[in-house]
Image 1 (cartoon, helix red, strand yellow):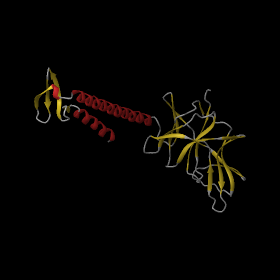
Image 2 (image 1 turned 135 degrees about the vertical axis):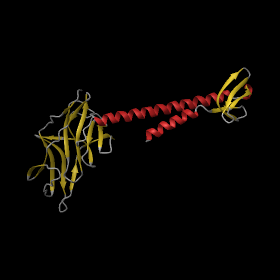
Image 3 (image 1 turned 45 degrees about the vertical axis):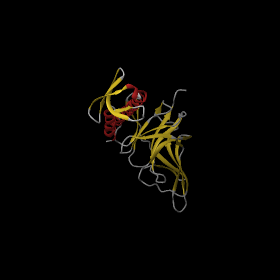
Image 4 (image 1 turned 90 degrees about the horizontal axis):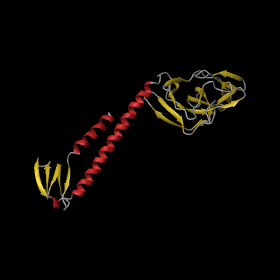
Length: 258
């Protein structure tokens, strides 16, 4: 609808551009469709009276008339370029969205080919050991500290771009982003949890990366990318609700050429 209205406005501006003010030196003007200088006189088509008329050349301020016409034509041309650029951007975005599956997950487009990130299996490590993370299945926790971990010191999902553009199709309207993982021995830590005594409230502590984000559709499809180049290391795209123990993790390793 916005694009249609924009095109109508440009069309109206172009139509109106056929009519302009032919200024007199006393500041008055005639609204005309066109004019012709013929020696010491000027013939012009009067919009008001719908006919050709004449006026002495020395009564007109043609410099002001031409300057105003040039400014208006430049504005119409600029508006047309802006709308054309916006239209192209919308079409490009539509083509972009068509390449991304509607299934929840994280994706990249590399050399015009789709790359699918695998959902990682995470585990909660407490003082009682490690428990496989099951989304939507609460894990009994005692007061104290815990960590959300991924097996292995390095991800097998290697990204060679230090500022990867990642598409994230959310499964729900939740918090999302890119986090940096901390390698500790044979595991990578995604989240440090503090379980509050009595209330069992869970406080998340994640190393979040500053990102740009762009919503591509109404069904929670986003494109995200880091504000700054990522250092080589371990990262993940995540979706979760703080304090709810439902973090979904798509891990990757950045190994960009220096």
